[in-house]
Image 1 (cartoon, rainbow, N blue to C red):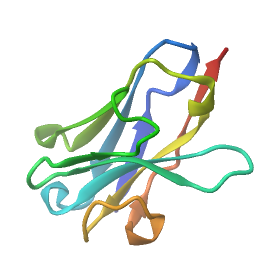
Image 2 (image 1 turned 45 degrees about the horizontal axis):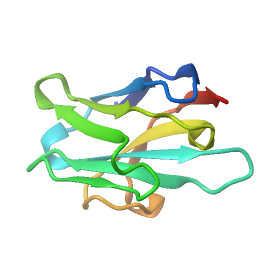
Image 3 (image 1 turned 90 degrees about the vertical axis):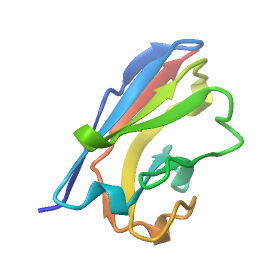
Image 4 (image 1 turned 60 degrees about the horizontal axis):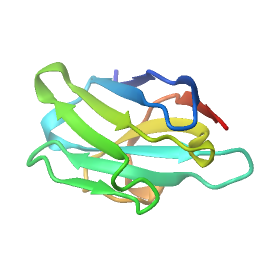
Length: 123
């Protein structure tokens, strides 16, 4: 059974940090790209970052570049999203997703999704 389980969300003040984790199981981790998305109330799901498990290439949306860092521990089948200098506009439910195709900011290309973890940044 394919599973993606996010953890690490919570409430933090503006300027603070959180580290999200995405633990994957049930598929060959090295064959997939893992992306992080977020969705705020009333807004569309937005691609935030992605890492290719095969070669470690990373991608970031302009809105988080320089503040967020994605990394992967292939031995643990886990991808992390370190979020620093958080802003109230980062408040959203954060999802990780796996793509057999390639890294993309479009949800359409992802095959598996986690249930999400809430991140709330207070001003």
